[in-house]
Length: 145
Image (cartoon, rainbow, N blue to C red; front, side):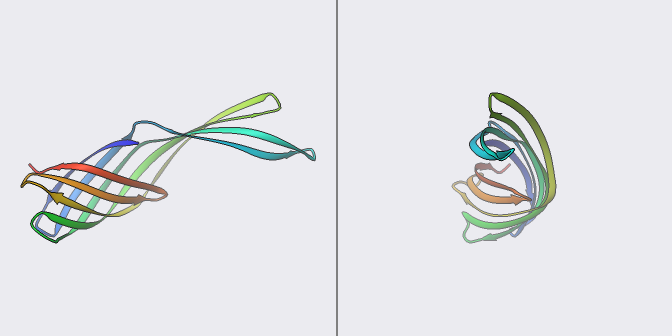
């Protein structure tokens, strides 16, 4: 779960530029038992991983197809960076080990979406964005200034 913000400028009916940033609000926990061979004997290792997307930022060019005065669909292409962190704990045979890893990825970002404007200045926007191995799905309130 993340909170994000966007700011953009619509150059004309068909093209816009925008920037987007987001920050993680929580993490996902993954629990698994993994069998490991230790000196020819199977040992179950209990693993817990806490995964957290810390932040991301992307700059986009957006191509817009206005389907009506109130409804647009769009595609967007840009470049950005995302940072995630994992905290891992493993327990086996009464021993516990912990570790942490933070990783940043940057690269091409792309996505599609739609926006419905219920007034001249207010709308609802939904979009999907892919940045390297990160999928971002958002539903947002949009305000035109």
